[in-house]
Length: 208
Image (cartoon, rainbow, N blue to C red):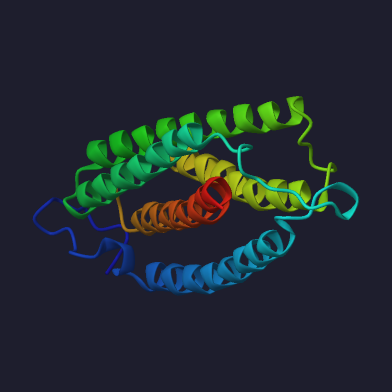
């Protein structure tokens, strides 16, 4: 299907993200990239679990009482809600509603910024009480795992924001539809990783 075709809601393809060969290639390439990301985070989780009880100079350390579980819960709700808003954006994309795509993607960015702001606040709090990156093997593993996820959040926010601003006057077409879809999938991946972080780091840390 030609990307230069003039589309309406009536002739818009059911799966615009894969209606062209370029779109299909982006889709396949993204899953290959995602496989590499899974390996990266699996390694970081394994490192964290191996070092989570190791305090300064080999001393035994417990994370119980360290983590701010209510704050982590609010962060989780923000990120999960942002995943839902990106789903709404893709729903509007499939219905050729460009304004709906832009609006819900914009809300996704706002929620993501809220999450990022709370994460920065959390890091500053831990450093203030003496739990810095170089304080112990455990703290290094924690900041590396959660910080790497935070970096991915920043990348996702820049990516989605760029799509919103670059396509404001272009409207929806078969060239940018796959880009919106892949960005949405990337955001879902970030959310899934955070659910694991919330469970393994925060819940297990507080309950363990």
